Structure formats: C-alpha cells, structure tokens
Length: 441
Picture 1 (cartoon, rainbow, N blue to C red):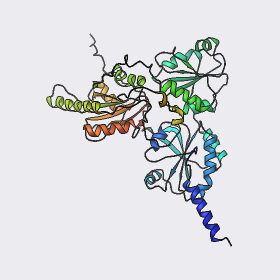
Picture 2 (tube, helix red, strand yellow; picture 1 turned 30 degrees about the vertical axis):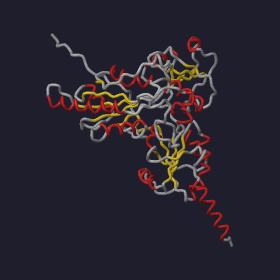
Picture 3 (tube, rainbow, N blue to C red; picture 1 turned 180 degrees about the horizontal axis):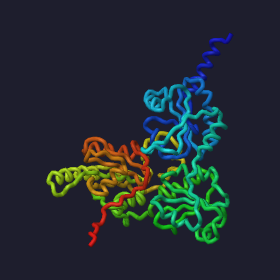
Picture 4 (cartoon, rainbow, N blue to C red; picture 1 turned 90 degrees about the vertical axis):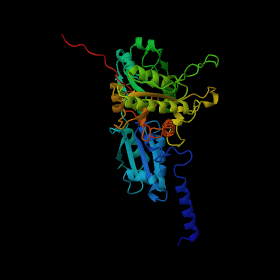
C-alpha cells in the first residue's frame, strides 16, 4: 500500500510542475486575451497554441514534448500556450471551442478577410518529433524566385523594404523560409538562384550564399550585405535593424530642428507619404498616424462647423500627446513572443531626446481619398470617425466612441502600445484626386 506521505509528496510535486508550466526560460510563451491577436497576426510562421489546465495530467505529460518541439523548430515555427484555468482566459478558450485538455491548435499563414489567421486542429502524435515535423510541413514558401534581371523591379515594386538571398541551391532552405514567414507583410523576401557575376559584383558579394537587404524601395542602389552567421536569430536581427528599425543619421543638438506639427489634410498619395509614411520611416521613435474622417461640404455652413469642431479635437490630440523616448516599450511586456530577442535592446547607448510619436491628419469622407481610406480600413459610415495607422508595423485600428479629446488620447495611447491594432492586408496606397477630364469634341 502506498503511504499517505508518498501520495502527499507526489501531489506537491505535480502541483509544482503545473504551477511552473512554461515559466521562466521556457521556449513556449504564454498568451492572454490582451496579446493573443496581436502576437498571432504579426507572423506567418506555423504557430502551435496549446490550450491547457495546470491540473490536467495529460497536459503535464505533454509539457516536455511540447517544450522540445518549440526548441527544435526555433526560427521555423512558434509555440504558445493559453492557461484556460485563468478566469480572464476562459473567453479566449471558448472562442476556439476548447472542450478538453490539452487542445492543440495550429495557426497557418492563411488569413480571413479581417486579417485573422486561420486555425486547424492538430491531430498528430503528441511527441516532439511529430509536432516539429508537422510544423515544418506547414511552413509557407513566401520567398519570390527572381532572375537577376528582375532584381531592380522587385526592389521598387512595393513600398516594403526587401531582402534577397543569392544562392546556388534550387530552393531556399527552412532557415530562409522561416525568416520570410517571420517578416511577412513587413519585409518582402526573394531569392536568386546562381546569380551572374555582374550582379554579384554590383552587390559586393564574393561568395554564396549571401543575403542583401534593400531598405529603400525607391533606390535599388542602397543595399546592405549580411556578413553574420547562417542562423535565424542574428539574421532576423540584421533584417529588422536594417529594414524596419532604421535609425536616421544623428545630428548634434545645435543642428536638430524641432518637429513642426499641425493637423494636415490628406488628398493624395503624396500627402499620405509626407504626413504619415516618411515620418515613420525616419523617426527615432515609432510613429502612429491618426487620421480623422469627416464629411465636408464647404457650401453648407453646418458642414463647415462640424468640420471645424473635428479639426479642433484633432489639434487637441496632437498637442496633448505624450512624448516618447527611442526604444521605450511600444506595447505591454507580455513575454508573449520572440520579438524582443529579434529587436534587441539598444537603449543603453541611446542619447536621443523624447519625440512626439503622433502625426494627425484629416480626410474628407466625401472625396476619392476619403472613400479609399474608409474602404482600406473597413471603417463604418458613422461620421466623424478616425483610424490609427502604424506604417512601420503595417497595422491599423479604427476608432469607436465619442469624438472627444480625452477619449481619443486614451485610444491613441492604447494603439501606440499595440492594443487593438490589426495587420493591414494591402499597401498604404490611395489614388487621391483625379484630374478633371475633357469632353470629346
């Protein structure tokens, strides 16, 4: 007969394992309703999510296998967990129809019209080798195959920065495919098989494989050659630092001019570039662009008055914003994924002054630009309204609520921290005003 003392010790040990599930230095990160959508939507790597309860024996048995699968697929797939025993997480577990523990869902690169990733039930063996094999089989091929002649066209084709693998292999390996999935919708990746000597010389490449990053979509001559190890983390850090978190050339305080800010109208793509996209590309802090949408019919006094009121609120949002320091956290420290290990922490050697993170503009809902902005972000017909856009993260969030200074400042702060932001499906492009045509004679 097993003694009571042995049973008590076993129960204590089991409770300790359950309480410490995926804590500390685990390769598996915990998700909550606060960070779940944000974390999943900013990557296209195959993503396992384990819905579990700490007291569940099968969950405890699965833990080391799940942990090993996460370690083996680092850079190729992501592994997360949701504790359904936590009261605040139960709605999230119900959302995915979790009826038993553990439940394993795998989120693919395929997305709904709203940008959310589609999930499938994992039905395979619950062993590390099986889960790792399945994750690799789900890894999408998001790198475009190019010819050397098509390089410049690829670089200038969209507004996103680019990264290109030059290789002798007929197909890129899992490392490059994993990097491409990690940076999906933020950096476009491609590969050139057996590039000619002229291309290699132009890019300063003397051996293959080689990786070149093109941070400026307007200038194919601006290229950065990667010289680090062929490993996921240093490569991802290089691409992030070179293509996404690019720092402007520092100036002395005597040379630095204060940022002149006012609420500007957006009518064309050039306006959008000037007000939102270019500041985001060159600012030492992440920039959030708040665009108010209001119907303006100048011939009607009531419409002019409503427009003036909206602009007044937008001006108060602009003047009331909090200054942000470079490298300050832009979202809650949720320990939710590996973006910290990719982005790193360079705040220790930074001496830049806090900067205004918001740019504020308005667009006439009745104009061509206004209609395109509303369609692009799926905004309702209720006016006035607004949308917050992060060009650097390629994400946006619509505004819901009374159009007041206090409400909008609180909303803008939440958006700046990443809450409520969703990936933008397409490019930030509006055609704007159209030139008046001529009648046929």
